[in-house]
Length: 351
Image 1 (tube, rainbow, N blue to C red):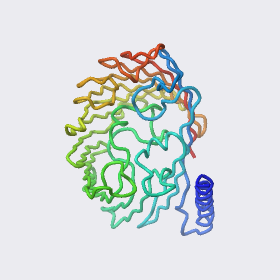
Image 2: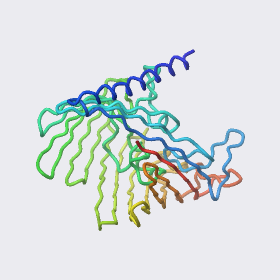
Image 3: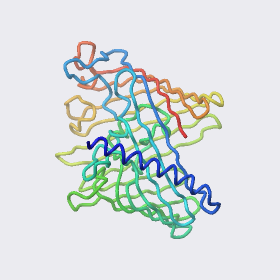
């Protein structure tokens, strides 16, 4: 009965969004309401490991988020309704499917449909220098994001997977000058998106200079500093960069690492990209699955991206190599090994 009630609620919400789009379209002064989003599906296979999960054993896969299911698998459907007014606006970002569920893992806590809300916020452009945003928004840290349509590589990095995903709170975006922008935020504890469970708050800041971002997050004694940026080396060659350091405590040790994202556009429809990432645990953070303190992993990912209209096809080869045997990297006998090679073929449609 609960499942039927939830389905009815979701159906009515989608109908409301579509009807609202039609209504706004009939008003010449209110044409800034839009519906956008994406869907993604994929096939994944290990090259040097078993692809089954017998007797409840986990499937061998990198310890990173998303794109880790064996065989033909589902990503998510992402539907975004938004209104962009001159002074005010809102975003309602809904996700359905395994990737969406993994992205908002700390919800639902207080509502039956909380597990479909990726972002939900309103904003106010006070003037041409300051914008206030109030609600649930995806994190400002890191190079990669939740939506696969906005990432070049289909699988995700360790830095993305173990950094924050989302925040709920109040942030101010301030334009300081032609080249500098500042963001300041007060938020609930990281990834607790529906309410505040303990009365403690996290604090964030971002300093931006010409699309280079220096990010800070302070959350109940834990601290993260992150640099995200990129450079157009030429008209066809781009280099993205991400580096981060996270300091936790005795119960939640930290990590550090860096990733480089060179991408070369070979034609109007095809781009070849590479992600080279080094990720290390400070203590036994649990991200690599070695069970050994101060272990590390190097992950190399080669991705092709071919556009056919609004459809993007992404074949991908990935090799993860850890300093110690990892319980995530299982061989054909389901025994831990140091490296795992895998292949992914993904299809992403954006609208």
